[in-house]
Amino acid sequence: MLGQGREEGRGIGGSKSPSEANLGGKYRSSVAEKGPGNSGGATKPPEDPETTLFDVRRRLYAEVEKLKKKKAERRKGKNKNNDITINLVAKRSLPKELVARGDHEEISDAAFKLQHVFLSGTGITRIDNLECFNKITHLHLEDNKITKIQGLEYAPLLELLDLSRNRIEKVDNLSHLKKLKVLLLCGNRIAELQPESLPESLEELDLRDNKIVNDDSAMLRVKKGLPSLWKLDGSAISDSKDDDDDDDDRHSNLKIQNSIMRAESPPPALLPRTTAKRAMLASS
Image (cartoon, rainbow, N blue to C red):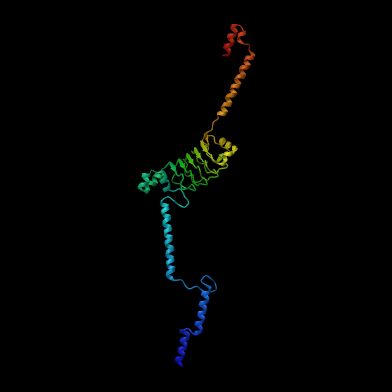
């Protein structure tokens, strides 16, 4: 009896009974019919630890490679936002021999002392990072993707600013540049311009290929609002027409005065010789 009980216990606690085996078979078949993607309250089997660890390692490796790529791009002066960097300035504005030597300290010192910086066609989207370039007098940023004039408070010595062929719609943040003489803005999207937004020191302004050139009143305000301006849109601002008008007025006045004098006094030939001589001397 005891042996039989043990065998029954072994059948209950050890090997599965026929009813349990049938129940387990039904459960497995129902899960197989539903499939792994179907929801039916069935729990998924646990993932293989080795497979999970492999996936984690693969993701970490991909992240490391991505960080390495970003670091390499920063070294080359290229970044996601196409900002102004020391490497970019050095590459475009310093002698190639100096850059080729690879002395970072020497390159940085030379870059910070630059007066003429050439960054045309580099894909720059904004003006920034000029804190260390406070000796710039000529800044070339044409043929880029700049939409706003900003970040020039660190360039107080700026005399020439070329922003031609960008995406600028509004002209501002320039009135503090007291030494700015040349401003090139052709090929942008400027529709209006207030002379107060420009420094009075400005001598040359180029607004060609902008919407504002079709507004005669706006262009007239620009001319009158900038006292030092002598060149606009590539042509000298000339007062020759006004001078010609003044000359015509002076000539007309002289003709009128001469006709009046002739009407008031008879011709010298009809007077005695001495009187005619005095009249000629008086008129001369």
